[in-house]
Image (tube, rainbow, N blue to C red):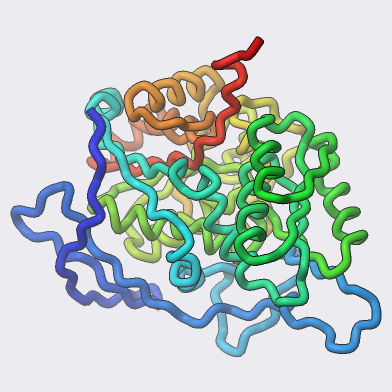
Length: 400
């Protein structure tokens, strides 16, 4: 049995917070049904100004600007926290992009609940534009670019490339996406269909090739798939919606690759309710986040991971790691057979097309490790983000 959780808001009451934010949350009263959800009023603050938006006025040659976080943000007048992205940035991102994104549904399944031992609420980002959460961050970043930036360059295993291509099409800019040769054919085809130029290369040379394209393209900018402030803020809008749609969440599980999605959701969820737990879900074959979390410092991924979850092969970045280190409560790793089994179960029981990277979060929720955590902490409601549904169906439906 699959249930769609409604978006109907309740009356709300004002509460104060010690975390430097003000919000309105729905007050749960006696007799409230589980399909009623609290309304979250987003407090929109002024967007931060980043250094790379200040262009030189008298440049004779075309200028290439990188939006990589290595190019430090300009020091704002007001003191910011130790994180380059804050809860208020996620709120501002939501206000900026909310009219151009889908508020994706939350589904539940009795069978999945019985297998887990607690209620699971699935946030289905395969219903987002470009069929993945990535569009949120890409749109938030592209929509803030100066007019004299004509081309966006990025490197991506597929979903971010599609998101950048479509966001650029909406905003009247060109896109050039560097894609690994081994990326799913359906993702490469979609990037081209959205109007982007595609350059294929060996996975290990993505950054090198993207840097070359950037240097050779006038009035261009690079937008990272996760290691970019506005991308992280945009991805965090998943968390804002989720906390609004599914009341009483004790924990949220988010797939982690480069970390932009996990960092953004952690900022949003903890900003609304500091007591909610946030966990990363990662393939055992690509476990740099879990190893970094265990050691307490960023561990570089030395080799290219081999995993069915192709969207989670990217390494953690310098921007996302501090947020994850400070706000995330743990990282659950799962084996390849667990990923495949959970992805299949999502297809069968929820009737949605989840890609294996989404299946990683479902596998984590059903793992013995997380069940032990849930039992110890008495979790009743757990949110699982199904990050996307860009699946190559060639093997399922071969053609002669």
